[in-house]
Length: 281
Image (cartoon, rainbow, N blue to C red; front, side, top):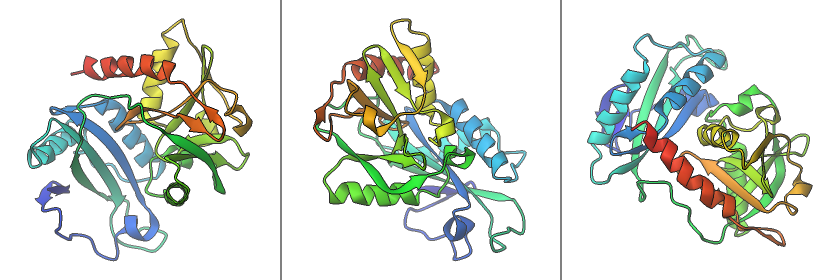
């Protein structure tokens, strides 16, 4: 079942038309959310990010669009998709039909989609995971790149490139040729006890798990955290690279070009991430 503005529809039922602004102009935002046994992971963080993004894009936020409202709508949709304790939820918000580039109004609609997840907890999968740089197109270093909008064509093309060349992922660069993020998440590199991730100013997504790991690392005196630009030349010198996103948590990279990587820090952090996620149950 799919939730469109509070009304539940079958997955194969069509309720869009050619005037949809998300389709025509990418005038849309989305949140990908992990839910386990009706516990919505990091709900407040997702909600605050969505509200901030809607304000930046000058969308009208309905008075009813509270965190409690969205929580109820998500749980209502999950109730119609039973059979597993863990779900992947995609909440999409888009400006309503009308206008060309300039909309006729800033009112919004929303869609909630639910899919089944195999694992109720974040699990570190020790499988080969090779990455490469994607250099055909570049991300901008600005606030719009920090938002989770539907304008993800660079990620799509990078995904095609990765599949064509048997890579599991690619790292995206900005116009200054700095490493910004992976196709599907933020990136961290580890050298000894130093953990580094690109700053938002470089154009990376303002990721929820990125934020949680930064908080975890700042509270641990055994690590030194640095939010700083990452040069592609650093990648073959570091001990470890991992990718983070809301669904998988932490994805360790095993190989980049001729360099193989360990996953020691990833193993330490995955348990702490699960603990943080469960604290608010």
